[in-house]
Length: 286
Image (cartoon, rainbow, N blue to C red):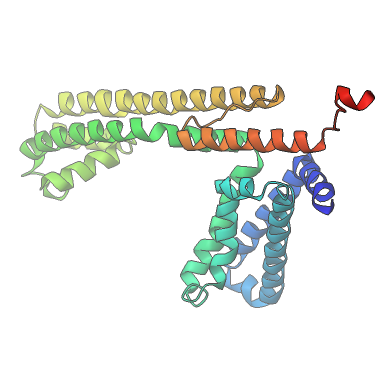
């Protein structure tokens, strides 16, 4: 009976808008303390206060995780199926592990990883994260095309400017690095002028590189990311519509996610059957 009373209350707290705002405030406060510790003067003057605030932030993270676990008391398996909950548990428990608590660098990385928790608090941030994940397959193909283009232009640059500019085009590796830095079009005017003093092919070389790499490839990357974000928005909208109708649609169409949704639906049906009043059979009235 206590579990049945506590789980809905914790679920109401988790769904309240102020809960996400409070969690985000703690994350921002923790990140601010982490940044202030990089200033030696502030660290020397307010070091104990910063560490006290950090401990309070950790306590806030722990309370948040306990409330989320309380919302799943009637179905604890659902808590552990959520990857964000596992991530939070790892972040909180890792500093207690031997070999980690003695390593200052790992501890700072773990403290920095707490900022990532902001993605779970707001749906818009989660959509961006899902969009980035969806763009990874296309990003691999984009990197392959970019590497081929840079390699081809690096070989041409080595043949044109390798002797006159060995610091930039002395080897194919140096040429690829120089061209990669040129993608930002930084100091392109001076580079083009110095190339024209070496050979007349500098103008078509740099102009074609700017059109191919700086414009076409950049727009291709933007198109991949925008397409992935649009798909993530549609998946999030479909999941929200399905949840509103009582039939959740997974934002992630993987088989594991579908199985998890089906299990959650079965758990919900079992709880409804347990709470439903027993209907007397017709024979009981005779």
